[in-house]
Image 1 (cartoon, rainbow, N blue to C red):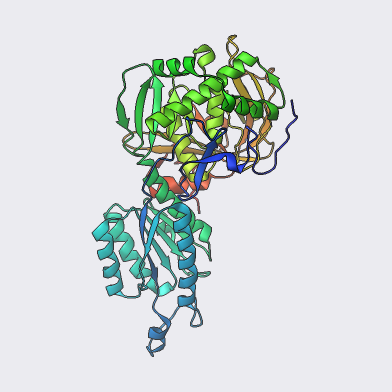
Image 2 (cartoon, rainbow, N blue to C red):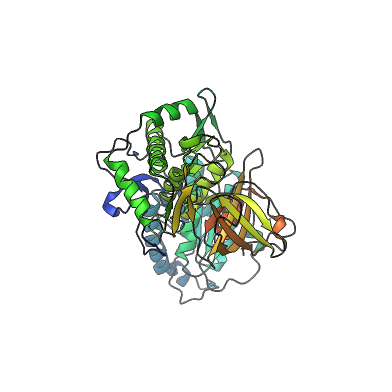
Amino acid sequence: MRNLEYQTEGGCACGCNRRDFIARVSLAMGAMSFTTLAVDAADTTTLPARKKQGAVVRAAFLYTPSKQMADDPNGWWSWPGNDYDAEGHQKKYAAAIGEMEKKLGMKILVEPKPIGDADGVQRFLKAVDADHPDGVLLVLLHNFTLTHADKILQAVEKAGIPAVFYIGLGVKHGPVGQYRRPGLYFIQSMDNFEAIEYGMQMINTKKLLGQSRILSVTEGEPKQFTDKFLGVTTQVVPFDRYAAAFAKADIGDAARRLLKGVTGNAREVRTTQESLENAMRAYFTLRKLLADENADGLTMNCLKRGMLKPCLGFSLLNSALIPAACENDLAAAHGQMLGQLLLGRPGFQHNPAFETESNHYYASHCTCPTKLYGPEGAELPYLLRRFFHTNEGSTAVQVFWKPGDPVTMMHYYAGAEPALDVYSGKVVKSHEMPPAGGCTTNVEIEITDRPDVCMVKGHHNLLFCGDHARKFQHFARLYKMQLKEGEKTNYKDPV
């Protein structure tokens, strides 16, 4: 098989090009869609995009117009100075916000007039009270309007509306620590449109999660229930239904083309043709379930299922940003969905282990995505081999992570007080299997934000490629989640 090194941008495991991709579901980036493998235009398992309503945010600029200040002999401009063109900056920021609105597929309703006095504050709050938006964005362009921003922020906090507060001044004297509080994402930075966009993306992510649907493929009667915090609905699908559909699945042209791409891109194939064909049956059966149930992702009671195990299928789905979690683990499914929406790349659900003498961490499992940098990013090298813990020979995937890459680990805890665990680290190496134990993919990580690796908690944590800890921490703060492990002694405020 072809010896695939770190592939250039845009390749995928099935060997198809961009025209072969189909729109899947709205990413937190809204109008941008994530994609899945459309290997046959006539394939009836193509997944239709679920219709969702993007978030609505009320936005306002805070400053006094230049002419009004110039006509006031006692006017005091304060920072950033009398020559500062606030109107020009508003136009620049408004244009950028308009682009964000299109990109994210949401509504950002900007007040046409800047807020520079008490009447402006009341006008804005009246609009907020009328439609109770999903969030509020304030862009402060004059230092002396800070008191107006404070009044608005206090009111929206009381109303339970998350807010993004941006001070776009190079110099803003005085402490700002009071804005590092739950329910508020505070930014002080010059022309940092990326930070503003992430604030909007967090609000849009929460909105989309509340309209999302996950399948739980397991024993039991069909039923529905909803995660109280994220709002994600879970639909139980009897495993027998999956097994019956799997038994009827044919290996048609679409499956053969996908299989050719998957095996052709692998470094090596250490499994049988029968096993590979069953992996295709599992993948296309999962896609059909998702399409039939109009769902965004799934989890499955998948252990001890013989050739019905969906390890390769889960890898393919997550690589295409369709959340798929092993062992009917809803926390992992929710975490995978949250991470994919916030970051635009999949996580690696894994079992934990510890190398105590090097103070390192092992993440291992059998469903690692190959597209850890996102669907349009480079594909990591991988090989195909049998599932590691049994002799029935079903196919799993071993992915080789890039040494030195930064990583972020996260775990979502549901309940009355929802929480996140967040850890930072970097890749040391991917281990050959054997001699290392664990599951098919085993990547060794140095945890860089904890003095003792044994402080890492949780099972089936999600490991994301990239330095994204601050993004998860900002989301936790904005939506008043606990930062669970180490919050008292090790958590560093993301300033």
